Image (cartoon, rainbow, N blue to C red; front, side, top):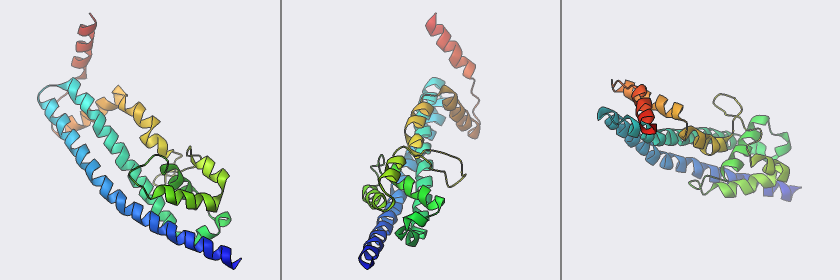
Amino acid sequence: MGFLHRKTSKQTGKLKTLLGLAISRIAAVRRPRLARKSIATDDVRQLLTLGHLDRAIHRAEQVIGEGNMLEAFEMIEMYYKRLIENAAKLDKPGECTEEIREAAAAVMLVAGWCGELPELPFARTILADKFGSDFAEAAKDGTGIVDPMNRELTKLDLAVGVEVFWQLNSMELKKKVTKEIAMENNIVVDFSELQDAVKDGED
């Protein structure tokens, strides 16, 4: 029993270190994404100023994509901090609260797609050992993961996968973002002009 306790405590200590490194890395990977979002936003503004509405809408895709990733990283960081704060409880995974289990599932899910945080596969291995193979399998598709910011059911993989793909190809969303940038810069946009151009091209 003493050996098992020492093993789990050692694993937990390593997990805290890995998650701490991941949090530090999130701050680093967030900066270039913020820069790319800012550049893309300014590109949209310039294109609107020049009257290139169709190109501005297309450029809005990157504004949306970078924004989604920034939101995902914010949510991920909150999960990691939750696990670090409750690390001692991980030595008895069967007694962990739902919030801790959600955070563990989030780490395991993100480890599958986020190459920017190389510590996570190692953290996933430790958590899988603690919570078991069934839990690890369920975490692969985001089952039971809850957004810690608004407590609504969500899937982190959708934030950067299927949902982002749909959003980037949603003309309605691209128009919405383009309009917001236009309003912030006192630029008037008329999307009916874009529709007329499409109709002319079809004739």
